[in-house]
Length: 248
Image 1 (cartoon, rainbow, N blue to C red):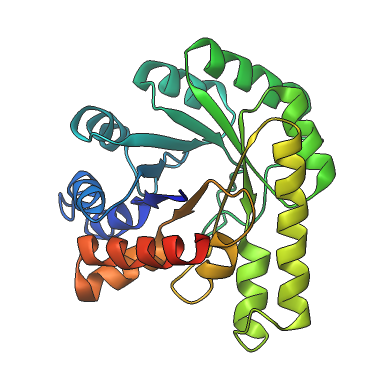
Image 2 (tube, rainbow, N blue to C red; image 1 turned 90 degrees about the horizontal axis):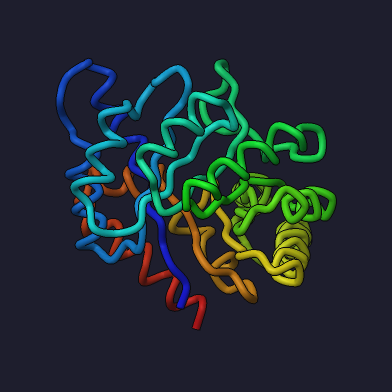
């Protein structure tokens, strides 16, 4: 059964815009759980632009489904994860100027740093995921550094889908899907779990959810955006229903 991890970062973004106490990401996580989410994702950025350290602590203590902590491969973040002990830590690239994550982690160029971070996280009993582009060299590097999960960056697919008629049968979209599937096949062959995420929404999610062997999708912005109009619980329910329908 395909699973859905709901990213609550954008709930914190709204709160931080006013530097106040609402809306609460933990409340959003509980509502997401009630709507059918299988896990909660949050990204503790080095500049603390949305999720705060206290949010991570409360998400760990007050929610009852898996917590996936997105983080840079830095000593500070590895230390925080080792104390909080989320079920999964996902290593991602991070730039101060970016609005959102702009590409996958380049493990090939940063293999020594990533290897060290993965080892420390695994020694703390945490499942380690890496967020990478759909490139065979990055998949192979993920296996070398000891990752258990690879999350394929679906941003290029999503942007192509939006700009090329919003039709999964257009040649450019088919090409992106084939790239992701090829990466997924390599991930599974190397004994890792195949996840995906980034820029997925209610219109483009099904072709990804239908890929062979995909285990979990991580989606945030689209769900939080729809929740403004229908509520978090219903927004999650609708997304999960689309995913399950496609996977079947």
